[in-house]
Structures are given as C-alpha cells and as structure tokens.
Length: 322
Image 1 (tube, helix red, strand yellow):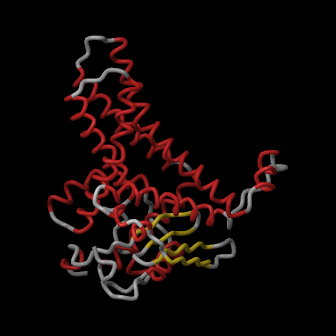
Image 2 (cartoon, rainbow, N blue to C red; image 1 turned 120 degrees about the vertical axis):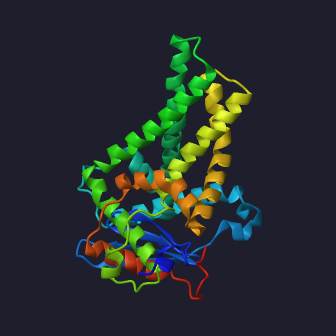
Image 3 (cartoon, rainbow, N blue to C red; image 1 turned 90 degrees about the horizontal axis):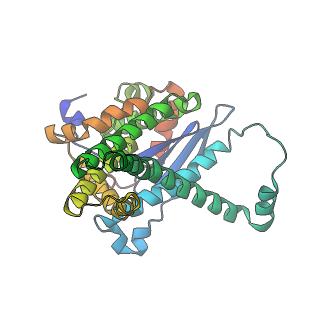
C-alpha cells in the first residue's frame, strides 16, 4: 500500500454500525443491513435513504445538521439492531405479559415497531444524559455541600474529570461483557473494510484483514468529543455566569447539548476529510478509546462487512467522497 493511499487521498462518507451478527452500512444513497443467520448464510436488506434535509433544507445547515443526523442515525440504528436480533431470538421466558398482549391487540406491527424504536431512542439518549451530564453534576454538587468554600473553577474541573472517568468506566464495563465481544468484532470488521475501500484496494478478506481497526470517524470518538466539547462549553458558560444550583446547572447542560452535538459533528467532518499531524493529535484520545469498542474480527465477519459496503456503493464514482 502506498503512502499516498494511506494518507487520505480518498476519504469516504460511508459509515456503519455493528449489529448482532451483522453490520449496518450507510452510503450516500442507500443503507444495507447484512446479517449472518444461524445457518451461516448472509441475509441482506437494502433500503433507499430518505433524508429529512431534502424536504427541509434548513436542517442541513452547519451546526443544525449534527443533531438531526445524530437522531436519524440512532433511529435507523435501533431499527437495524432489532432486525438483526430477530435472527437470534432468546429462549421463551414464559407467557407474554398483559401489557404485551394489550400492545399487540391495539397496535399494528408497524406502529408497535415505531413505539419500540421511539422508546429505545428516548431511553438511550436519556441514559447518556444521566450518566455523562446529570450524574457528574450531582456528584460535584456534593463538594459545595461538604466544602462550601470550594472554588467554582475547581468544581468545573472536577465535573469535567468525572464525565471523562464515567465514560471510560462505561466503555470498560461494556467491553467486558461476553455477548458484546462479538458485536465489537463486527465493529472492527466495519472499520477495516472502510479503510480498505479508502485505500482503493480490492475488497477481499485478505486486504481487509491487513487494515487497522481504529477509525477517526468512529462513534466512540464522536461520543468522546461530545463530552470534551461539553466540558469546554460549560466551563465557559459557568465561568461567565457562576451557578451553584445542581438542577440549574443540569438545565444549562441540556440547553447546550444541541450546540455541543452540532460542533462535534462539524469537527468529525473536518477530521474525516484531512489526515495530517494536527488531526492525528486531535483524534488520538478517541482512537485510543476504540481499544475498548473494537476487536479483531474473523474472516466470516469481514465477509459480512465487505458485502454490506458493496451494497451501498454509489453508482456515480466519487459521490461518497468527503
């Protein structure tokens, strides 16, 4: 592989997500879900992308598009995860509950799926907000309770360090889960396949296997940058307008969240288009964190990743270039 190809002569906007025994890959025109079923066969599902910014152009503007794309990715990701889970159903735990029977009776399968997806997205966002915003704020609030003279800048510093520590602990705990290990292997296969494609190499198992498993546009890196940007923004705001009330600080964090996600999205787009000393330094922490969320895949996982990427390649060459 030449240095020119490795240095980013071509950067694709195609990205993906690891599923249960499969991968969701999203291109500029369509997305594909490829799952390996219990018989070992690859099952494919391809859909044309309908982007909300095509109907409402204002939602595609910088800073605004970050939050819109983040929520859209979460919805599509949850749907794909539910689809992949259907191939590996859990053993029956007993009779359905009255609530489950009520849902099946009053909602169609499509409406029921929409309800489940909406609940999953709300719970996912809610858990993230609680762990990385509310919890650190509440914990640092105890500092002023026990140490009334503690300086506000010190509280801001401790709150920021707690956010990073909780995020790191969360990744470590997830990486130790046995069922998650294979999902993170598929995550590694997704990254390797995209690297191989960006290097303009034939998409073979041998070529993909040789690629690195850490990618600068990974969701893990995105979440880390979200936390870092939120620390910077909240430190500036609380430095100008000192606030000690826990719930008021939490409210400010929530109000800042769309801006934080928007800035992070633009940052990821910028580092995704460039490969130089500065971008490598800026992405180094997020790349290191991928040691917890990506594992080396086996050949069957690479085959799944390759197929999912092939299904979303645009007909027009270069349409997916960043």
